[in-house]
Length: 83
Image (cartoon, rainbow, N blue to C red; front, side, top):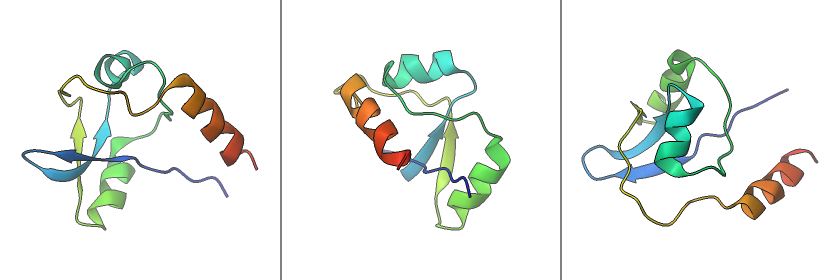
């Protein structure tokens, strides 16, 4: 059965959140090019994280810094989930 894993982030105003982006371009602008992603409806995502007491931020502004993912991380993750 397919599944989706949500990466969680600490946000200064909202605590622990999941990010969602309305376009791949906005995702890349915020978090960099090496990002695992899936196209999905925000409704089920919001419902899923709400069960854990979390919220979803749509198209958040992200302070530039170290990327969470590098191309080699993404390749390793892809190999792992294919097992």
